[in-house]
Image (tube, rainbow, N blue to C red):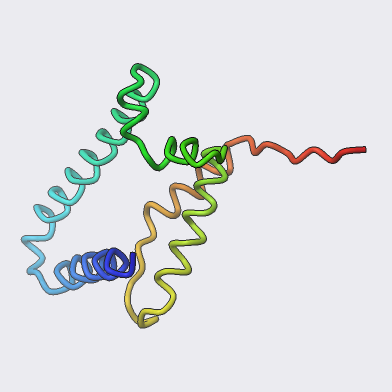
Length: 125
């Protein structure tokens, strides 16, 4: 996990450095390429989510959401998302505060959580 955190920080900071240091005339092409990558990744995730509804095989291959069942733990997507956000903050915390942190995906998850219903805990009377 520590290695993944380093990779994420490296790429986020490399892109920021690249943007800052490239000539103005090259920036539009760079931004188009970056946007194309984002669109591809979003489409890929939407495809995975759609496949989960269609086949058991796709569900089995999505360990993050379905692996908990093998451990006898039931977890909803909102619960999982909150845990992931906490872990993201915790695991990136030890690195130099001057490094740029990824914000797009965590902010999109926070936005999505605002619109999701969270199961309320029931209190036994």
